[in-house]
Amino acid sequence: MERRNFIGLSLASIGTALVTPELALAKNVPASPVSDIYYTKESPGRWKEKVAGHLPSIGIEKTGSKITIRVVTSHEMKGFEHYIVKHVLLDQNYKFLDEHLFNPDKDKAAISTFTLDNYSGAVYALSMCNKHDLWLNTATV
Image 1: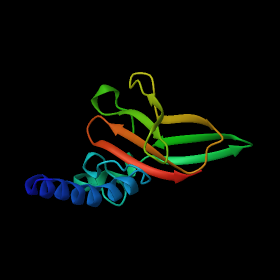
Image 2: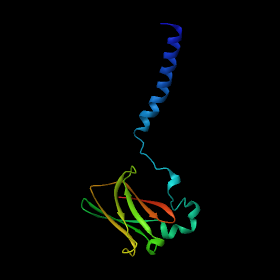
Image 3: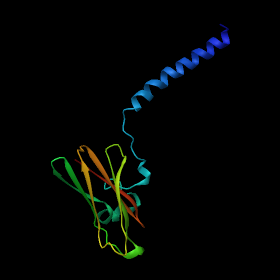
Image 4: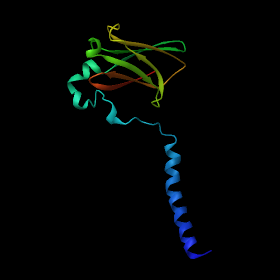
C-alpha cells in the first residue's frame, strides 16, 4: 500500500471511530424541539406578562386503558382580532398525536379534548395565539 493511501485510510478510520459512537448513542435520545420557537412558563421570553392567558393547562382523566386529555387556554376569543388558533398534542418524543383548530367566530373558549388508548409517559400541549406566538406545557400520563 502506498504511504499516501495508508495515511488517508488511517485518518478516515479515526474519524469514523470518533463519530460512530455519538451517532449510535444519539439514536436512543428523544428529539427535543428548538426552544426559540415556543414559550413556556419558565421561559416566556418577550411575553412574560402573557403567561397566565396563553400557557395551556392540561387535565388528564384515566378510565381503564382510555385516557382523556383536556387542554384549556384561558385566553379570551375576540373574533379574528385576537384568539387561540389551535391546540396541538404531542407525545413524549415530540411526535404529533392530534390537533384541534378553533373558529373564533363560533368558539367562545379555547378548550380541546383528546382521547388516547394505552398511552403512558409525557404529553406536550401547544397553544398557538395569533398575536403572542406558540406556548408549550407538559404533563405526565
